[in-house]
Image (cartoon, rainbow, N blue to C red; front, side):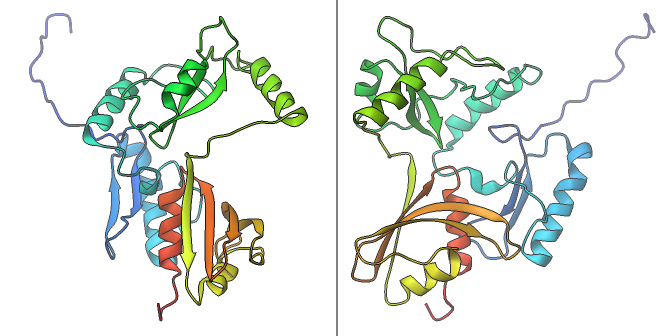
Length: 257
């Protein structure tokens, strides 16, 4: 073997999504157009991807939780530049230990709010929330605003506890730019939302918290809904699931419009 030499070299492309997981599911905006790509470990993942996709096409549900593969987990913010940077970061860390709540730096900041610089000036430790820079916690004065990741309590435990106490005992202000926001309006708006959500819609000027279930009784969302009057409802929910939820809303729109 020592003297055999290299007889042939074969190079082939890998396909990656920016988090290293496959991209599977119906593509928003296109009818009967499905995606099953970025399956890097094709031999080991192909069976599960194929099963999920066939269940989804035939029965309308993959049959098990495939959020980690769902193509809806990314939006327009996942540009080619962002994806290239994240793919390289992910591959370079392929055999590294990933810690709970660990935030990775490549391609950031991609999107910011007008309060971004103010947050940094107040020692905010920022996180990536669906491509948007969002404050996770605030480091004490004089301390470096940086996560020290751990499988136990990390360095954010104390400052977050102080923030909770201050908000509970005094007052707190939060930025909600990282929430997904929807508006549903029209004569059938209330009936539409009553059919999708587990709770009944609130009266004018009121707000309700409500889960949303699929046809199999599985939890697929949690929403805050306000009745703004004049057949108009404002909705807030998880930013990470906004493409997923919009796909569900569009799928269940009344056939008569």
